[in-house]
Length: 196
Image (tube, rainbow, N blue to C red):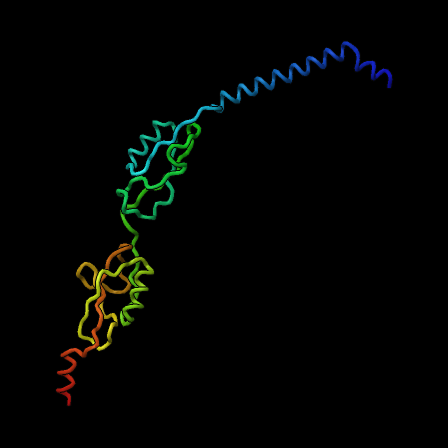
């Protein structure tokens, strides 16, 4: 055991220990220098504001900034932005990111998606309104015709034309409900009187 402790105090051991420590320090410094240069440590690119840009303009801005892009879900139409323009991005504009980072963009579709008109014929006006609003359609106005069922829906109109349940319309379309006013139609009265 004494020989071992003597070896630890020997000149040969101390020189080898010093060389090993020097090698570790040099290798660590070289590795850090290489990582810094290969990962562009401390070098960032500012993300451009892409909101409202057309797809070609967005591509140009992304390429000029040295970034990449990927288009994500574009099913939600936003009427405040032009068709086929950028409505959202991740990361947001102004953030600092590494060169060649991927930016996720959402493109405004050409219009609202189409929804199916539910069958609200022979429903009450209140029920029909709730069902139509549930699928994303709006009621622009209500008109009345001579029919016995007061506030019962008899027809639907879109842009002045009659439509049927099952038809497809763009979401947020404005419809007209044609409801009964609670009076018997004149033709029914004439027919009833002629049968008597």
